[in-house]
Length: 265
Length: 265
Image (cartoon, rainbow over the protein chains, first blue to last red):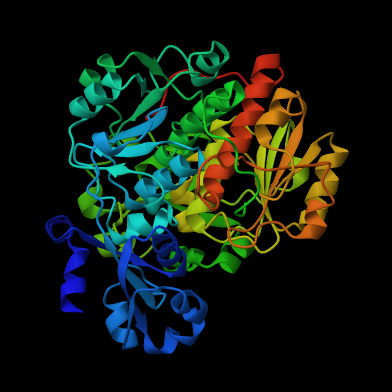
């Protein structure tokens, strides 16, 4: 347990090649792709998760409720935590690259997790966290990803310049987002500019993208603001851009197909 | 101060017709529309907010840092809190109704605030929180709204049936969102179905919309999921729907115009 508890630290996760996932949804998603090696469950939560644990096919360790809570980073521990292999993905591990999100210096764990979840839903091929972004394998990010951390490559430990260069080499058009861009997302979509392979660049919550990154892109767009809001939440803006790409690509039949149904709204 | 502190309780906000807004962004947004009656600032935060407070034109009470922190619902108090008039808006207060979000039983304050912010950005005319939704005038919601709580009517204390009936009477087509809908958002947009006045219906984070509400709508759509995600975050799904409407209406020139620039990404 002490060894698992240490995984709450980013450096330990990296060195050991493991991370923790909490709650039945994330544990189920990890099991579904064979990414877990062990599950910790609190003694009083055992019966609640019987169906999940019966089919796990890996070691399930029943520990005290306090012990499993000590692995948690949330205020309401859910009593079940999985030990997952850290994929340590690089750009080279992205299979196709029709739609990729590059996030520079994302600081809020909730935003990072929601971006992973939305990218998954939009059929993106990967999410890249560049620069000094929060570690996407931390507890709060994993939780906000709602299982999507296991569904697509999440690349870390890369500079934004390297991410841009490598994704351009793989055929992506690099589109930077900034509210000062003269052109908006919708007119670019109408002009067919989002039909091809696209890597979107998103900046930090407070500072946006640095000028040096904006000028390195092939195009610069803004999400239009029709009302009086100063800006959009980063995760929301990211989802709107990725869905604009998904819509354009789906219409051409070049992107992923809508799975239809599933999930809740 | 004790009177202000009591405003952290929803019932007190309603009875007294006041609510608290925290941080320089929200205080600035409230001042801009003349919605504040008083500002509390911590003594050590005075100089930091000199520009904001100099132009306030209302009473500024310098109190101890602890006192202003006691008004805060956040873990990192920002040292400045405004006392705002609670608008107590009803459907009747919505000026135009080309684009409205009706949220049923929204529970998460961060989602509620982000929905208000996105609705503002999409040029929506109002947000309605129906049923047992979180009080949108609570501290966490106001903070997540990033000032947008002052930019459009936020209607509370209404059943979803009443909201649907009144908005339909005002000419809105009622569109319910559920992941089981046979038709998706993008095909509806392509077919021109989002061109007219629309009130979107969004359900609870975990349970979605009840069947009785879904069948009361004029149309039922899903946000397409192209990847393996089970669902989208509620605030993200809401923003994608509202932006699809905004795009359709802006193209026809019937909706609000993109303000261009402003904000960050």
